[in-house]
Image (cartoon, protein in one colour):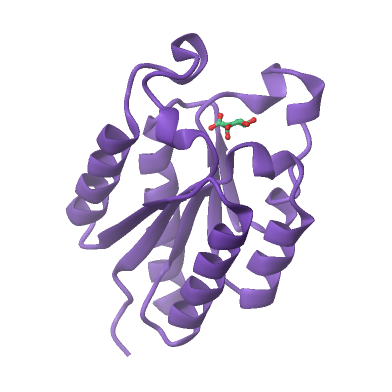
Length: 156
Ligand code: DQA
């Protein structure tokens, strides 16, 4: 079987406000810029990024289920996922990732551990294959790189 070269880049609630939202924390890059960065980073590594954003937990869950099925069919390497505030609240996202067996690289633009205490716990991290935290939007590139390397190493 040939190596799956597609990845899903998933952004959760309020990440559509990037560029406008708390620029001292999240920078001035817009979501469109981040998605262009992800598509370029994937292309440089021989892959294709499908970029999606939703403010709705159920929509994110449906996309994770869909991506899990594509992964199990050998059509997708996994997902880079910034769950936004659902990171700190959502058992349902944890269960969706575990249940669908989707390899997820969790990414946060800010260093959540250097911020408020309520951001220190992630329900997603125990279900993720790896985590990138605090490198700004470059973290998406690091997460794409890690996910593709992991997939390709596993396939030999
Ligand atoms: C975030 C960190 C979360 O705590 C926050 O709720 C976000 C963005 C980040 O990328 O740093 O929405 O996931």
